[in-house]
Length: 248
Ligand code: SAH
Image 1: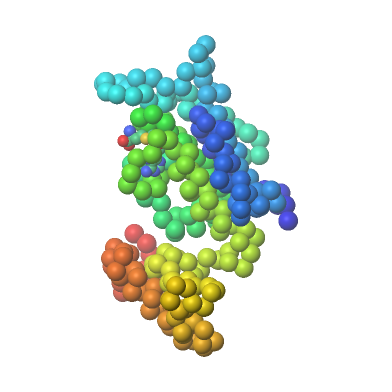
Image 2: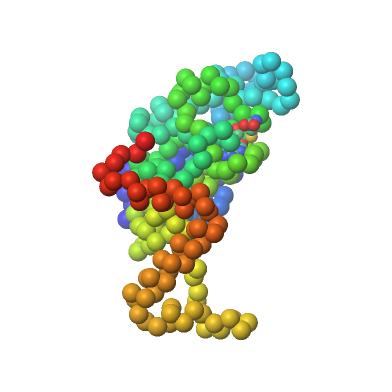
């Protein structure tokens, strides 16, 4: 099963000990052990040059907190890219609340590539010049502020890894899942047949695959409409667009 050049996530962090963390168990952990993907956590501090190995400094212009230094971080990125087996054209991401919100379609794109290099910020963030000079693409996992980029990076990697070939077996396409067709997923049920007076919807026990599929589609649509009017509207727009139209 082991591939010569598996999908690889390279993390630049001040806390490499946080990895693999939750990525070391269950599906992702087994797949990593099987060589289906690789994780490399590199310590940004290894690229510090002064006696105190400092990585941050006070913000220019004043204000609270500390900012990660451009020179140290750039050196860390360059060192990660200089490793002999590295693909030069992999995506370079910076986890950041200012970034473009992560979506399932971006996850699918990242999973289909060689795997990203991911910079995790800490403190007040990182010096703007390294974002520009190393062309980091800022990615957010939602409109709230975390204390560091590590958990955000884990979210992104987890979402990618489960889509890699062989990781989820038959489920790998994820075709039926929330977001894959612009809809939230329909409700799921399993045994027992009755729970606290609530039966499983009868249709699901009918064995009629066409009716089951129609029911699930209707549930998914109703749920999306009620909970995510934004997704619902986007889907309506997509469906109006001619099939050969390009993104933009
Ligand atoms: N002062 C910054 C927040 C820094 S939070 C601001 O207001 O934009 C410290 C680090 O946590 C960030 O550099 C980033 O790497 C990470 N982080 C925080 N919230 C995040 C989010 N919603 N998505 C992705 N990364 C996030």
